[in-house]
Amino acid sequence: MRPNADPTDPAVTRFLDAVWMERGLSPNTLAAYRADLTALARWLTERNVPIMRTSRADLQEFIAWRVSAGARPRSTARQLSSFRRFFRYFMREGVI
Image (tube, rainbow, N blue to C red; front, top):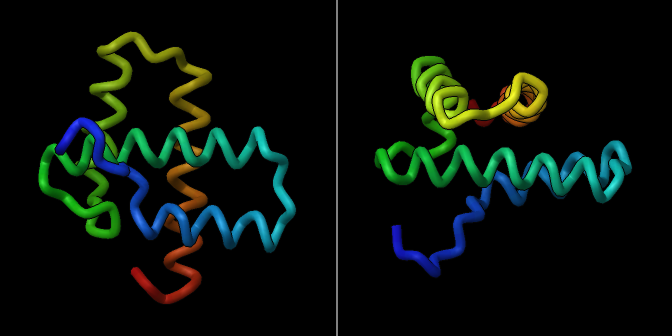
């Protein structure tokens, strides 16, 4: 990926817009979702995997990579929560 490329996937933007409109989430919660999903999208981009084609194995590998890099359990739990919400949203929308 180019160093100055915009890593925000359109699906991430769509999700953030939707949860903001639906639930009126706080700016801090939205920022956490954006950070978590952007980190995943960047990691997947390096592996040529679109975020909407993410497999369970991809997510497990990403989490293992984060843990090996020193991610704290609380951060890992928050990321998993963000990912669950993201993929559930698109399942509910019939996209995946």
